[in-house]
Length: 166
Image (cartoon, rainbow, N blue to C red; front, side, top):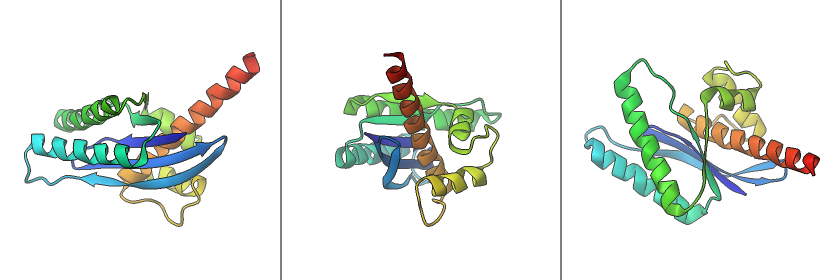
């Protein structure tokens, strides 16, 4: 199964694509879709959409995992992240792939074992779990990989439960 993890953002949208076979996770690719502040919001959202479409065409993921929007004190930031998140959801729907959403707490718990882990701890564990030479940068990319790992762990747990109930 191929999972694309998305850390939504308007300036930087982190992505990571994993191949999952049983309990084995391997990295297919990761990176960031970056937009430029001199563009209008609509143009930036279009750039994100086109970047995600290209990833969908090239890698054909089976599902998308994305971080749920959490309450943010800065309403402007929350709105722009929400817009970028909406573009990611739309792109997945257009590609016909299911979307699975996780809270930041769920992602941190799944990857580090601690729901209050900081960015460095998450990046460190992403590097270890995926056997990478270094922590992916920027943080948005490490977060996107963490979101994909979270979904892989969640799917693995669900499969184990289904087997044990049979």
